[in-house]
Amino acid sequence: MDHASQLIQERSAPPATLVIFGASGDLTRRKLLPAVESLARHERLPDQFALVGVARTSMTDEQFAESALGERTLASKRQLQGGVRYVAGGYDDPETYKRLVETLDELDAQRGTSGNRLFYLATPAGAFEPVINGLAGVGLNQPREGSFSRLVIEKPYGRDLVTARELDGVVHSAFDEHQVFRIDHYLGKDTVQNVLALRFANSIFQPIWDRSWVDHVQITVAETLGVGSRGGFYEEAGAMRDIVQNHVLQVLALALMEPPASFEAEGLRNEKVKLLQAIRLPTDRDIAEAAVRGQYTRGGTREELMAGYREETGVDPLSRTETYAAMRLNVDNWRWAGVPFYVRTGKRLPARLTEVALQFQRPPHLPIPTDQLTGLDADALILRIQPNEGISLRFGAKVPGHSFRVRTATMEFSYDQTFVEESPEAYERLLLDSLIGDASLFIRSDEVQQCWRIVDPIIENWGKDNSPIPTYEAASWGPTDADRLIGRHGRKWRNSA
Image 1 (cartoon, helix red, strand yellow):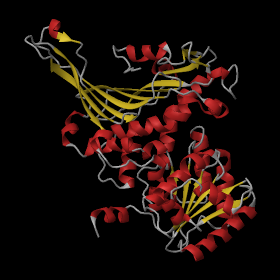
Image 2 (cartoon, helix red, strand yellow):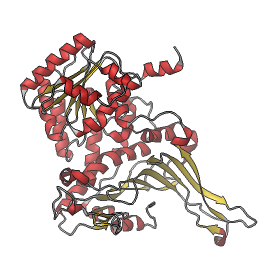
Image 3 (tube, helix red, strand yellow):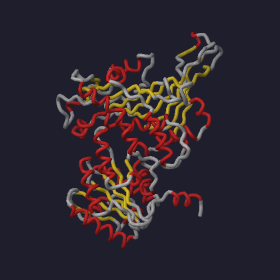
Image 4 (cartoon, one colour):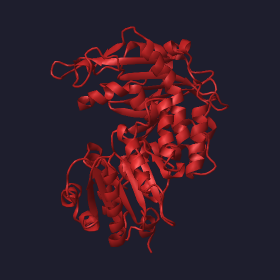
């Protein structure tokens, strides 16, 4: 067997049936079905694989197969042909699950799927409980001997700590924790995983990855788009619930956690939980200085005037929902005590950008005269997660010429220019991991609770604050309060248009 074939065999799914609840929805169409197709095209799915869609929408097996395979490649069509089924019915109707059992038994006999089932909840959060109860009602939560039964749950996982614990109660009444895969698609990005590679596969960074060398850290998740057609959803979520509680805090945990004993799932997740536990909870008195919110208003140019948030479809004209959130966090552990961590996210910002930037301490003494320093910034290491995926190292260098002048220079690593391998989409990677049973990139129950523990006091404080919500023009870098937040100690945001 050649090396390429061996790698495919090592990271290929076992015989199984993927059951997607919410099969007629947008997530299934845009993300899940293309992920299945790509896995089939790259020979990551066995011949003993089947796909079952479940939704309220009336549809035949043939119609669902056409929607799943209609635009797919010939190779993936051949592999999935005959293994696609559809079950129509309400999520709270016991008959739906009886028909599902019959369908799964037929596929076990016809396709050889070995009783392995992966149930994917691509539904609104309100359907989680009836689906879980429905699966348990017909015994699909309990795998047969030698088989597996797993549950993949999309965010939002609760609206706060209380509701997250309530959902855990529902989930754990039917599934053990090792069966549950809470998905955050950010963790499926190669560039997010590269944070782990950079930190733990390179000895040169270990000595400087702590409070002795790092002045502060910035984590930015910026979007140029507004809420679009998701106004109704966003009114219930806001930036803190939609992005900070999951994406931002997960990236922060990976960037700051201690080295795990191994890259096994529990080793990684244990260290992430320890880091999240070490984040100091803000008090009501601290929140005014440590957290900032904002809401975008009409802005842009005459040629491209963008509507304000309150003008978007489905948004309350008097809405107080934040579309921008920024925080200063402190980590009370040996490695990071005293280092501030600034995180921010927002919609309708000037650039689409996700990055982690470590800015290092300035030299304790510069023997170079100030008139020979031309725009010399502090050294920094920037991990670009999207777009232009890569790493930048910023440092001082001599300017060519007869005089000794120093200014900032940058060394760049680009994924596109360095690797020829195709990077899988996040859902493709996470779907394969859940079929294999690798939980490394999924979120454990106690991780969810720690994240809510951090953001809940801020959300609650903002909910009680009746003062006008700060605003910022669309296509600007957020409210002026955010500049004051980071500027109190002489620092500034890394803004780039």
